[in-house]
Length: 299
Ligand code: NAD
Image (cartoon, rainbow, N blue to C red):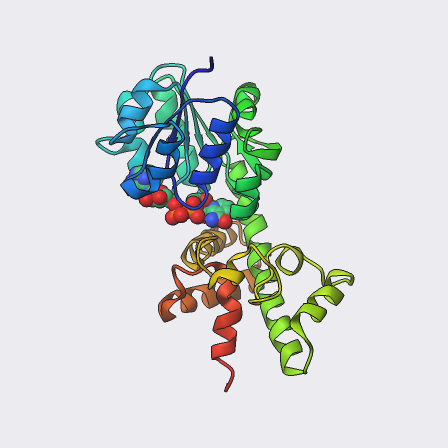
């Protein structure tokens, strides 16, 4: 039988990802600061621990799926963190979307203790996490890539090596800048079409057979009633929180500034998602930008 794999952070993404590891025969040892999150995988036989340190003590491969940079710093270097108890030779894979500079810091700290850290952020959303067809963008030592791929390929069908540690995050931030711009564009387009008297299902069908087609139009449509099984069909619950998109766009802003790169629409997208968070959309899926635009209808 296979050795236990550690999993820390069982939220919207971590839950279905850990389930796919279980499905592939990996016994899971997990923790989350919110105990409710662990229920489903506990019922599937996972062992639940109180802290990240206790997980790292028992598993020599640990995956983390946490909201943002401060959570990752806490889970790795905090008083009950992974690095307090990690075994030499362990492989630590962080699939959260965070600041690439933090990934580099975590890699250095892990290396000092004789462990390997890799960044492996994901794309695809909760649907792809459930279906096991996420895309992983992996940064770190090339020699460790195959060991990481063995686990990641249980959760994703595209596992791509990007380069040194932090480059997975770089790829992810670029993707999410484009995703944010495309989602806002899709929401604006759908709203305009509705105002022009078009049926949103028909407009979606036309866009999806035309040059405006994108993931936000054909897989994750923001208009309620157009598609089943997406957050817009469920009052924008679950999915990818607007606050997390605002976090990613904030990271995009600082990387664009540091590299003196123009990112005009990326910057505007950041402001739009920040404003949404201030207006009560923080915990809703990011496709609720459609609903946000509908509320601005008298402008
Ligand atoms: P989430 O908020 O649903 O889940 C995060 C989990 O981490 C929660 O269960 C929370 O309780 C737990 N957590 C927070 N701090 C912790 C700590 N100190 N110790 C242990 N557990 C802790 O977030 P999510 O949607 O699953 O996203 C996770 C990451 O993946 C984020 O970085 C996000 O940007 C990225 N991401 C999300 C999606 C998506 O569609 N949801 C897609 C791609 C990437």
